[in-house]
Image (cartoon, rainbow, N blue to C red; front, side, top):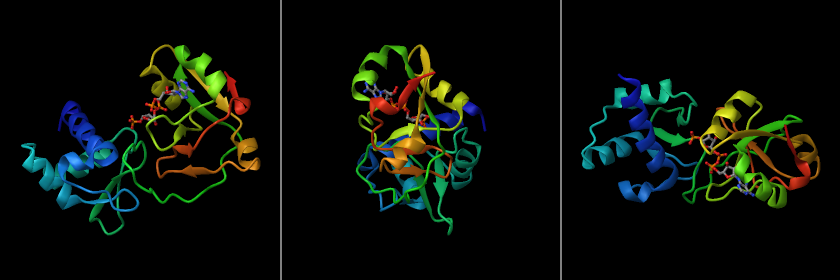
Amino acid sequence: TSKEKLKKISKAMSYVLRHRPDTAGLTLAPGGWVAITDLLEAFQRDGKSVSETLLMEVVQDNDKQRFEISDDGLLIRARQGHSAEVDLQYEAAEPPSILYHGTATRFLDSIRQQGLIKGKRHHVHMSVNQQTMLEVAQRHGKPVLLSIASGEMHAAGHQFFVTGNDVWLTDHVPPGFLKVQ
Ligand code: HQG
C-alpha cells in the first residue's frame, strides 16, 4: 500500500480517535478505546472502505506508532494527542532528568511568560529524542528545541505520564524549568 494512502487513513483515524469520535457515531471508552469493528463500520458508512488488514498495516507501519491495539486484538486507540474528553488511564511515572520539547521561535516570548501550556490537547508533549522533537517543531515554523528539567519538576510534585511510544506527558511546564537549547 502506498505511503500516501496509509497516511491518509492514519489522519482519518487520528481525527476520530483523538478529536471527534462523535462525527463517526463513536464514543471513546475509558483509555480512549473503540472496537476495531465499530471503527471500520464507521469508515464504511462514510464511504471510505478500509479493510481490517489495511487498518493493521496503518497501525504497524505508522512512523510514530500513534495507535495501539488492545491485548485481545479487539480494540484500538490513539496513544496520545487527544482533544476529546477521555481518561487515557496512563499511570504516573518518573521521568528522565531532562526531556525535550520542540516549538517554533515565534512562540518563545509567550512560552517564556506562561511556560508550556497544553492548549486544546490533554497534555504538553515531550521526548528524550531531540531529533523527533525538532521534527515536531518544524510543523509550526522555525524550529527551536527547549530542554525541560523534568527530574526537578517531578521532585517538585509535577506528575508525568509515559505512553507506549515514548512520548512523555505533563500538564504544564512552568517557565522556571525551561531552557532554550
Ligand atoms: C506551543 C504531534 C505559545 C507548543 C507531535 C506547540 C506531538 C505555546 C504548540 C504532538 C505555549 C501546540 C503534539 C505558550 C506551548 N505560548 N505557544 N505558552 N505553550 N506552545 O500541535 O507539541 O504527529 O498542540 O510549543 O508529534 O507541537 O499528531 O502540540 O508548538 O507529539 O501524532 O503551542 O502532535 O503528533 O501545538 O505536538 P500542538 P505539539 P502527531
